[in-house]
Image 1 (tube, rainbow, N blue to C red):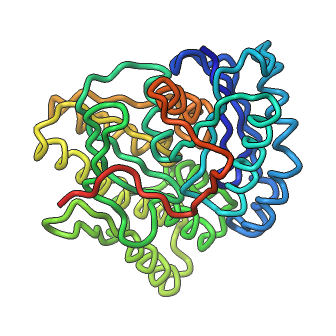
Image 2: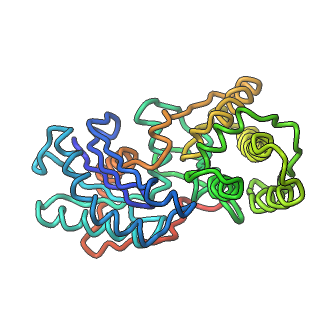
Image 3: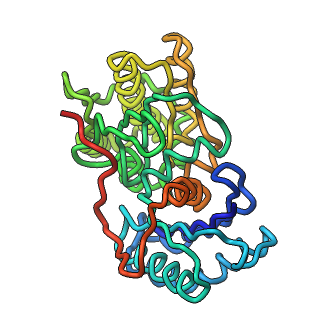
Length: 332
C-alpha cells in the first residue's frame, strides 16, 4: 500500500511515497534556508510564496523517484497543522486538488504525530515510550501508549528550544538556521567557562527557554570581547541539560524504560551524546531517528497517514489547516 505524504508546515516543501507506513520509497525535501538566511529566521510570506512555486515539482519528483503513478497511490496524507498558516494552506489545498482529480482518499495528519511516527520508519520501539519532540516550533514531552494514543506531559511555556537556538545564533552573528551553527561552534568552546541559568521549573515537566536567551543577551552586552565559542558552548549546555534531565525524569516517574527523540533539535550532536550517556546510566532504551528524519519531511507524514487510512480516519474536501493543533490529551 503506497501513501503519498505532503508537508508544508513551515519553510521546507516535502513530498514522499511510503509503503505500508514503514518503507520509504522516496522522500524529497526542498529547503528554503537560502531564502530566509539573510533575515535570520523564517519570513512567513516568503515561505508561502516559495511553497507555491515548489509544491508541484517536489511532488512530481517524489512520484518519479518512487516509480509510481497516481493510480498506484492508496491515500494522500497531508499536514494540516500545527505550523505557519500560509504554508499549511499551500499543502492542504494542493493535496485536496490532487485527491479530487484522481479520486484518491485524503488523510489529515497532525505534524507532531508525524514526528512521533518517524522512528517507525527505521525501528520498532515497544509501547509505551516517552517521546521528546524538540524543534524550532515545538518542545514537548509525550507518553505514547500506542499509535494514535498520545498524552502530553510537558511543553514549553514560551520559546521552543530551536527558537532559542535561532535567536541566540542571530545575536552572536551566526547564520540561519541557528541550531547547526551553534552546535558546530560550541564544539570548539568550553561549556564550563560560562554558567548560564537552567530553568528547571521545579515540580513541573514543562520547559522555559526565554530566560536563557535573555541571559545570553545580557552577557554579550557586558562582555563584548568574550569568545563566541564559549558563549555558544555554555548556552548549548544549559539547554540540552534541561532537555535531558526533564525527559529522563519523566521516564522514571512514568516507570517507562524507552525514550525516543524527535524534531530538528534532536539532530544536535551534543544532545544526542548526553542523551545516550544518560540513557545508558539509567538503563533506558534510547531510539534516535536518523538526522534526515529528525527535521521536517513528508515520509513521517505518510507513515502517520497510513495508520489513519487503515483505520478509516479520512478527511473530506472541507479540510482546512490550523496554525494551532495540540496532539493527544493533556496531563492532569
